[in-house]
Length: 204
Figure 1 (cartoon, helix red, strand yellow):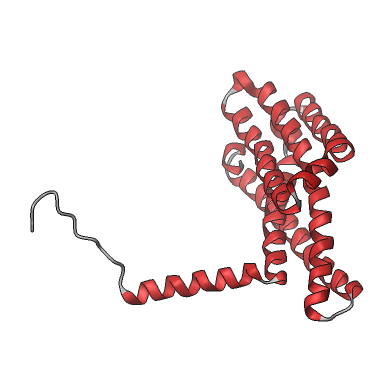
Figure 2: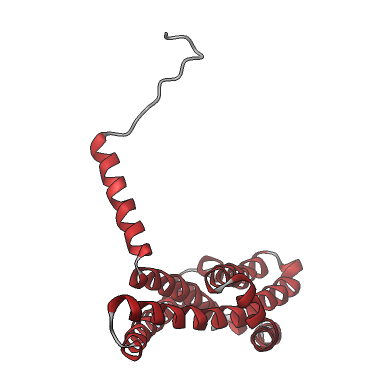
């Protein structure tokens, strides 16, 4: 019936659908395995933290010495207080996985505060301070959750693989450190390159 109310359902080609299903199955299998889940966590954590350290290095240059110093100080003070006072309770209540997810999401507010401060001069100070307060709180929570998640993954992988827990811990630590440091260096270099050839807004 070619009436205007009749809509024909359009399906993707069989080959394309098969390729998508294959990729989806590979991703699911990877995340279901212990090393795959750990690798996904390490990638997300490292990219997120690399973005934070990249803009942290530009704080004084873009916000000025006074605001940049106050913002960085607020970040580290809230980081310390969060780790000492609330992080353990939050991880115990929500679990390591959801604490990591929430912490990574909150960390994005810190990076976003640079963009707001650069675009809207009228809210430059409040945006920078509020963003650093949220980011600092997230950092203390995030690193506590990462430690708990790491310990549980190492224990689970040792049981599943039959390898000694110390060897599993050492291997996982080397994998995490390589990814973490690698993305930190790459993103810091990328931010400097983009800042030189673009603008601070383009970096954010």
